Each structure stands twice: as structure tokens, then as C-alpha cells.
Length: 130
Image (cartoon, rainbow, N blue to C red):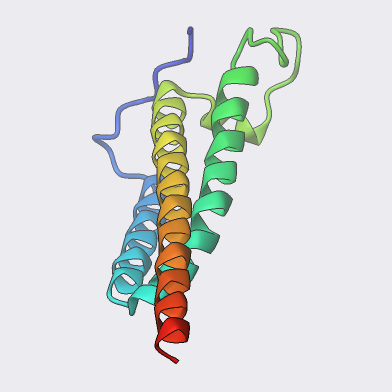
């Protein structure tokens, strides 16, 4: 796909340190959300999954479309600060995240549907008892 290979991550830089902090914070909040009760957790993940899927879809599209000699950017445009996002690592990571969050979104929809069916069944049984 001719995405440029990023420079080595063996040397620390302020941008990699900030990225590590952001990923750590995201991981800690996700672990905290996993310990919530099922109803609250379902609501939280149901709102997070489409947002994250959309974000990573946009990032994946940007990394691919605006690469050097890409379909949108071309070779004639000036260099901008967002060019550091046009690497194979960013593309691969955001693509895998997009696929994963889409899968989570679909799974949550199925679970929500099954929960609604169970609630309707319980309600029907209670009405038959009365």
C-alpha cells in the first residue's frame, strides 16, 4: 500500500510518551468500566462502541487517503503537521481497532436484543400468573 514505515520507537520522545499516557488512561478507564454492574456497563459500552468505531474508521481512512502519493493528497501538496499519522503502524493499528469495535458494537446489539426478549418473557409470565 506504499505507506511509509515509521521511524524506530527505540528512542523516547515527548510524542511517544504522551501517546503512552493516553493509551494507559484509556486502558484504565476501560478496566474500570468492566467492573460496573451489567446494566450500567451495557449502557456505557453501547455508547462507546459506535463512537470509537467511527473515530477509528476516520483515522484509517485518513492514514490511507492522505499518504504521500495517495488518492486524495497526491504528491503536489505541502507538508502538514498531520503527516505523522500517515504511517503503516497508524494504519494497521487503527484498522484493527475499527474492526474490533465494530465487532463489539454488533455483539452488544445482539445482547441488548436478547435482554429485551428475556424481559418480555418475564413480563408475560408475570401477567399469566395474575
